[in-house]
Every structure is written in C-alpha cells, then in structure tokens.
Length: 103
Image (cartoon, rainbow, N blue to C red):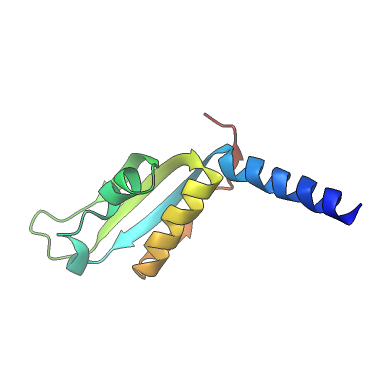
C-alpha cells in the first residue's frame, strides 16, 4: 500500500514538473554581466520562452540593467532556469504567482 501511494505521489510530481507554467520576474543584471548572454541562455539552455515586458538600460553600458520578464516553460524548466539565475547571484523579484496552464 505504501509503495502505491509513493508511486502516485511520484506520478503527480512528474505531472507538475511537466505542466506548462508562466511567471513574471524582475531581474537586475550588473554591468559586469553585460557581455554575458544571460537572457539568451534561459532560452537556449533551459527551454524557457522569454518575453521582455520592460527594460532599463544605459546606452554606454556603465550601469546595471533592469528587466521585467515573463517566463513560460514547464515547471521543471522554470525551476532550472531560476536556479541558474540564482547561481549567478543576480537580484530577482517575483512579480506574480505561477499560473498553471496559462498559455
């Protein structure tokens, strides 16, 4: 009986991990990262669809860049992408709660 419940839990977790999800975040990318393809990697390495809804950049790249992003992916892809951003030690603010099946 316990194994069956565990398998059900495991199956539900897998469904959640593969369910389409979207969220909005604000991110600050320090000037030291201006030559790094941070947002591009969200698409190419993590399979996230990125919509830049707002951005603040200086023309001479002397200041930090601020972005508002709408991210769409499976729960697992989104978690991996956010882990990547955290590993870069970027400032991230969650704008909304995740919307399941919102796209």
